[in-house]
Image 1 (spheres, rainbow, N blue to C red):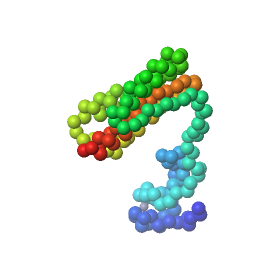
Image 2: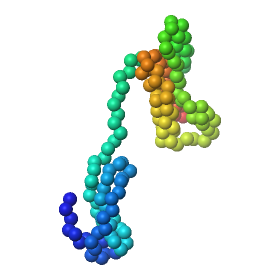
Image 3: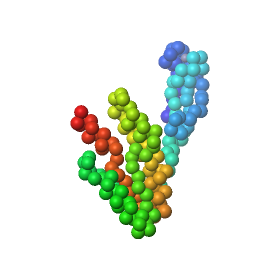
Image 4: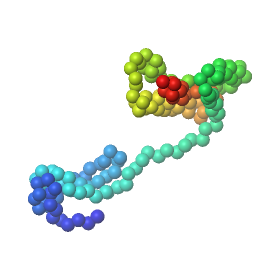
Length: 164
Ligand SMILES: [Zn+2]
């Protein structure tokens, strides 16, 4: 971007030669900002480098993920427990997981007397799931193990909400 050397400051309305400031944005881009030398108001900026997102190279997992889902009361917990026990007996490297995973999240959801904001609730469950996936599920799958999971609680909650 080529700009005239002299600019009119949008705040103090003076004709100025902007001061150059190198800054880094929240997204890791380097930008050259041009600011008013009198009131420091932002006038315009030039991008010096492109945004660089962290590389996400999916690792090839050798394991197997078995999820039990279905309507409330159809026996997901029972059957996932049975499958887990059977696989364990047969000598497989297997874990049984449930959502929510974090105790504090479980307590919060079960004990909360007040209506929880639906968006906040969705974020809480999303955070819980990310931690479960990264800390527990992925390491097991990467070493070739098996993961048995009982239905996620979000679905359960959506049933509650429908029923209200
Ligand atoms: Zn100014």
